[in-house]
Structure formats: structure tokens, C-alpha cells
Length: 564
Image 1 (cartoon, rainbow, N blue to C red):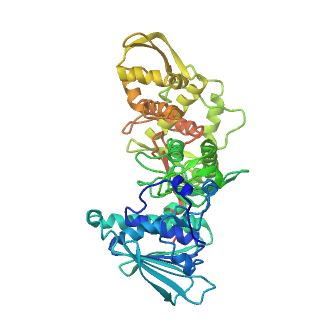
Image 2: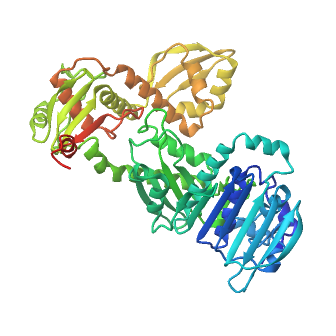
């Protein structure tokens, strides 16, 4: 039953404008349909939503009494007291959406409940009812807006210039809710043509395939984690897969699409080592928490939320990512970097960087004989170098090409990191006295402890002087280091400092690695293969470019028409 919210509840609801664009209307109406338990939702638009927005559903419908109240300000059936604000489980609760629409468009609402023989309608202009009565219609609700922003010419004119953008926003909105509710059929119509039609799906991965296509869905790994209070159903792209846009990046909390800068930063920091340059991972996170552990009453658009235990949620996300990597490793290794078996008790030669595997130095250990046996074991064979850039290997699965620079860069990076873990800091024999600006000094003062944690021991002296005593392993001092540090870290949260330091180590690994157009020896190529096997992530360089590509025998046979 729809009621008018008490004043004390209205005062606690986040105030602000709800309807700024056509896509806002579509969002509010889709959410109303979902709250009404609809399993078929149809959206129709003309002129990007300015001419017409019509949303139909087969939900529970409204009685005549509720219909005549639903467009009034602060009226809702979702909550009725202050306590309800702390455990919101529905999409709507503000009681403002239809009232806002009634102020900026010509509004017509029809609805019928299952127990009613006929439906009822009401027509509203300028927030005032103009007509009402009975109508024959199926169970459910239909909301129609015409001439959106007819009384706001400046806003309407601005939107008319970007109607294509408005339609794109609506497409994405429908896709977002379609993923969250695979059991609902969604239809989107524009200019009398069906633009989107998602039939009811038997599973979420089936709906993801419908929305994003095979190229994305086949590269997602599903990880489910359930705890006493929280659960996470995650769909994460495999290492090495990437996109140019953030289209397939969505977070849902209790089926509600939300934005969370904390979760977004966490995901991107986890993928940083395996992501291609200037590309994005794909991820869909469906998080379930008790309603009282989340506050959706933060912003009028209900997209921004606050978690009571954000650290617990971030921990869930990190665990899901680690499980995804474990689950992906064997699949990826078949296509990208096949793992070789390694005899118990053996180890590979440790060398100073950069790799110069044509000459074995003093660090060679007695295990060299074991290394030779590994080189001669059955299963793979080095064929040669092509274009002075790519190393070619024959494997049981097919022919593999390895980018020599990317491969050595990965080896160098992981060895630098490993040594950095053993000895996280390098103590300078002669501490360096550095002149600092006021901006640099203020940064060092505010982040002093966090800088020390990642290996920068800096003593502030009087005036414009400081003394640098230690550096993180893998970072070399140069003129302007502090300036770069302030520029690179001033907007970075302290928990991301280590990731930024790793980025600098990655740059060092890049500089000391062999480049393209350099001839290599057979010994080097074989040693590089073995070193690569020891890497935690042999599939990409530290910047995310692929290290290797496998052309399977089956694919080769198809190219030669030996197999169809």
C-alpha cells in the first residue's frame, strides 16, 4: 500500500534532483518494475526519450487508490519509518521519482492488479491530474512520458544536441540490469524497432553471453565465495584478456548496480601486473550483504553506497581474484605458456640482472648438471629466432612464439621483486642530502610513515633540506626522484604505495632487458625458457603485454586445409 512518508523520514532521505536526463527516467521505471516482481519489462523510446518513454511490465500492479497517490511527492510503498531506512531491500524508497517526472513531462500511468477485472489510469500535466478512469489491460503497469522537459527549454535543447549519447546511455542501462536479473525478459524498442531483446536466461553466464558476446564471456572465470554474512559471485577476466573500454565492469550489491571507488581501485590494482597497456579488465561482481550493512541513502540516484565493512568486501574481492588466477593457470598455460614438469630438489641458475645467459658467472651452483638434463628432456624443442625479436619453440601442443623482450622483462621483474622481499630496502652507504620544495616537504611530512613502509627512509631537516637514507630494492636514485615521487604518489592512497613502487621496478626491468632486433644464442633462448617457467605469471610482461602466443597443431592443420 502506498503511503505519504512522515516528515521525520523525508528529512533523512538524501535530497536532490532525480530526473536530469531521459536515462534517469528509464532507470527509475525499470527499478519500479523490478520491485513490482515483473519478469517481462518493455522499454520504448522516441527521440532519445524526449518525445516518448514508455515502460510496460507484468508485475503485481497498483490498486485504484495507490494509482491516485503514486505521483504525489514523498509517497511510497517501500518504507514507512526511520528504521526502514537502515535495512532497505527494494530499489525504490524515496517516493520522489514519479513526482519528479510529473513536473517535467506529460505523464500517463495505467495499472491493474491480478484481482481486478479492469485496470485504472491517470493522466497528469504540470503535476496536476487531468483525467482518470478505467481501462482494459493485462496485469501490470504501464508508465508513459511524453514531451520530456517541455517546460525546461534550455535543458531540452542541450539534450537534443546529444540524442545519440542518450540512446547509448539507455542501452548500457538496460544491459546492466539484464545482467543482474537473468530471469527477467527485457525488450528495448526505438523508432518502432527492437534494439535489444534479452529472453529469460537459465543462468547468469548465459545472460552475460547474450549481453557482452562470446569473446568476453568465454574469457570470464566464475568464482563464488560464501561467508557467514557476505557472499560474492564474481566473473573475472582471465590474465591477458583485456578491453579498450570499461563497458564490462559492473558492481552489484544485493542486485543493485552501484559505484564503489574503493572496489574499482582494488580490482585495477590486482590486475595491474597482467593487464595490457591502456586497456581494461572485464569484471562483474555480485555482492550480497545484509541490508543493515549497507547505506544506499547516500545520493538521490541510489548508485553510490557505503559499506559498513569495506575492508571485508575488499578482502572477498582479492580472494576471488586469487582463485581466478589459480583456476585460469592450467587453461592459460595450454594456450600461452605450457608448464614443464620439474624434478624434485632441482633449482635453476640464479644470475645477476640483466640476463646474459650466454656466459655463466660465479653465481652458478652445482645444479648446473640438473639444468642440462632439463634442457634435454622430451616435450619441447627450441627452433630458432625470427625477425631478431621472436623465439620459436616446438611443443606437443603446437608452435609457440615468445617475444624475447617481454619474456626477459617478466623474468627480470620477478627476480627484482623476489630479492626485494628478502631485502625490502637498500641502505645508502652515503645518505643523500636533497633540497626540497614546500610542496615536497609537506608531502613527506604527511606520508612519512607510509613512505618508510615501502622503503623510503627520509629525515626532514631544517629549512628546505632532507636526508634520504634508504630506497626500496630495485629503485635507483637520480636527480629529481623526490619530485617524481611527489607527483606520482601525492594522489595515491597509502595502501597503493607499494603498487606504485612495483610500477617503478617494472620500468627498471624494462630498461635492463634485451630489446627487439637483437640477435640471441641458442643457449640464451633455452635458458630464458627455463627461467620463464619459474615465474609466477609467465603470460604477460609487467606492463601487461603478452609474452607468448601458441599456434596449435589443429589450427595449423586448418590453415593448410588438412582439417575442416
